[in-house]
Image (cartoon, rainbow, N blue to C red; front, side):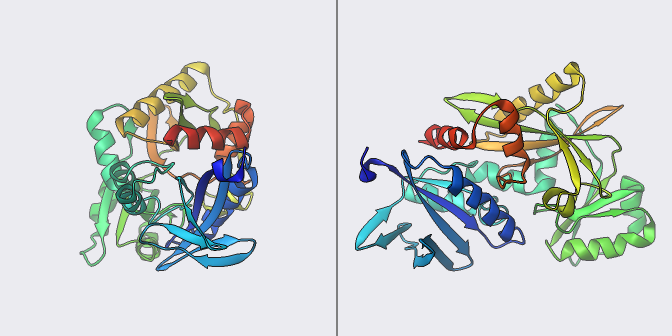
Length: 327
């Protein structure tokens, strides 16, 4: 197979959020494992108005009008985008709309699904309407509005979690144990987003479920049990080794099947594409849905690669399956 017959893949990374560095690590892992006999991968970094392609360590400007670049006087057009931008603009639907206009397929969810799921409050309300799974009690607080602590705590109780409405990697999240901790937690979350959520704390076992689409079939990966060594599954737990991530999760078969069933249902309900990760809490009262990650981390430390290993699927084969599905 000649070089020109290979599929040009833009692995996009970076973005405009505090998850920039996490995105770079995810993209690096994709670049290291992609099958180069089938694909020509190009690392495209995006931050604000600066879009560039890194070739042999050299940055080259990307033409935003057609999403292309010139390489040794040859115009490179991309056949597909492998989206590894966590946060805006890759996880909130903005890039998906841009690539829809250019008719370039993207490995992640479409613009409507991405916009809905990136907004944790809207996603919570949408899933709640289906009555398919338990959800936590929450309060939405917008920057500039009057904050009545008693009203918030009357819904969430203590302890509770305060977090940005839009964002990931557990940045800006606080576990509030007393009333005097609420305002500092809100201030921290408002540094990440103009809308903040206060959620009731659900004591239980945290489990996450990876799901992807291959050859038109929904594939469910082995479940992962998360045991943070910190207060909760925060940034340090996710990326600095401060948690035990146990795959497969140590749960009974009935609970495992229920989580997988709900995940497939939500995957189809939300019209997801590519690969996503659903997070849950298992509690004596039942299964609680936390959120869905439509561009989950793919670094060496991330959970999905661990799931793939126990599924018996290599990273290279997984990347190929994801690209072939959107093509």
